[in-house]
Amino acid sequence: MPQTRLSILDQSPIPSDRTATDALQATLELAQAAERWGYHRYWLAEHHGLLGLADPCPEILLTRIASLTQKIRVGTGGIMLPYYSPFKIAEQFRMLCALFPDRIDLGVGRAPGGDRLTAQAMSGGAYNSADDFPQQVFDMVGYLDGTVAENHPFAKVTVQPKSEHAPEVWILGSSDFGGALAAHLGLRFTFAHFINGQGGDQVTRAYREQFRPSPRETQPYSMVAVFVICGETDAEAEATASSIDLRRLQMDYGLNTPIPTREEPLARQYSPEEKTRIQFHRARSVIGTPDKVCARLEEIQQQFAADELMIITVTGDYASRLRSYELLAQAWARQNH
Image (cartoon, rainbow, N blue to C red; front, top):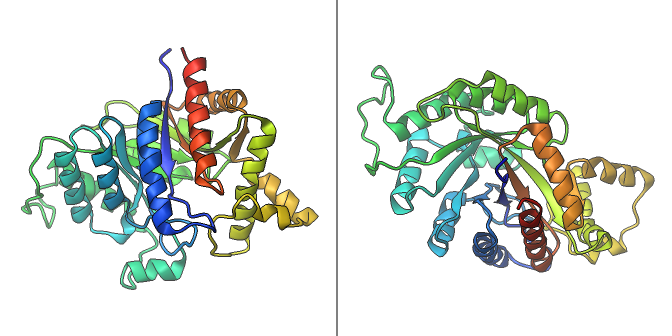
């Protein structure tokens, strides 16, 4: 059986003692390191109005990353399509494919990537709660591939630039909606286990069972995105994870804050209810030594019948995040050869 590929999803986190500029520079450094360590693809997430995340424009940032790397696939995880014209997204990614042939991924989702007011501002007050998302995806693929139906109102429009290259198209989801849509349209699918730790295996298996071959994909291809923190020891991994424990509590309270540093949780006394909530969130995380993390990832891969694993790591400092990805890559290579 071939080795399951590992990939990276980067949200460009901003620790409370750093700036957005620092976060973007850390993303560039991590992407180059990821290529050295053998990760297969590097995706950027889209978020708006969040003080802890620095990237509202993944289609711009991935251009810089692609120019700094040679082979690793780069893409979006994902473009929040309800905000945009499918035609414009198709042209953007046609351009990216012309610049970086056979390296570009276009992952699209329907979540707002921020709060409701920001979503309204992003869409000029016309945010549609993603009701039109299936049709938007269908149109976007038609523009990308030159397969828009003759009776489509924009069938005669020319999509530029002309190129024989096209991005891989992925549907992102944390529920059965995304999996069902990807299966119906014959597209690749990624389940966000790091958002929803329950039921994703059933969603992904249903996607595989219901998949309808398309001109793009003759068979299903799925990936599961998992939150991971790797440390040299269990104690180190736990100490590093304390930042994200506090971060998730802050999100539960509706607080818009940067990512806590490792020192901030030390000054916090958690109530019994908060400790219970922390353990609830831990169900969608894999935390520990490299060997333990690899063993758990293999279990998740088999549970989901996934073709690929995508790793997201957020910590309170960039050095520990970088080290976590390095430790995982080294251990995965050892255990899969």
